[in-house]
Length: 255
Image (cartoon, rainbow, N blue to C red; front, side):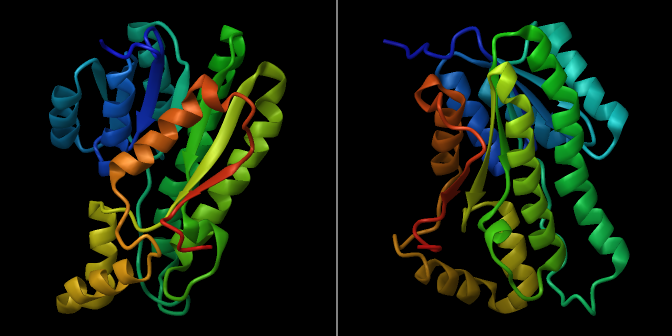
């Protein structure tokens, strides 16, 4: 028997063509939700939308205010409502020291990872408030938003900021029964993690990957599906009393 516990619900997913975004889309559609997939990679977006089904692909740049307002308006116009928002789009940025990292590179990471999250909250929160039936937002931070780390300053700074934005939004939205939480993934097996290993280790990236995996107490990298199950739970009524939290999903790395 089909699981339809999310039937009638609509989710917006930024970074929808990526590994985690597409996994979340599949997890929601499995339980009857419809999803709007937002990404600027047109080819990948169309491919993922076709695989997921029940998906509305929307090409947009999360750093551009008009694009952000546009993806929210298009979702409401075509799918009728918004219940969930996975504020997920992000980039990894350079793996150089603060002294070596050009300000332009810092600005590029902050534009996507912080401005994009802020603009998304600014566009979606009023819709959820007007609808009047609550809702749930999940912002993708990182375990890097909970500690420091050498040669990764723009990304680390951006993910600290995402946690601050999520907690602030949770306090502002609570009176409307809108919940806002952040997730802090550890080493998740995605293209982004592979890019980080390649940037840091070059030809030795496979050895670096193995060493990183060995650090995880559970003995493996996380999968996008692991993250998707957490996000789906945060969207569900099973987490109805959870807001303003940071949910770490890292296989025990930060224990």
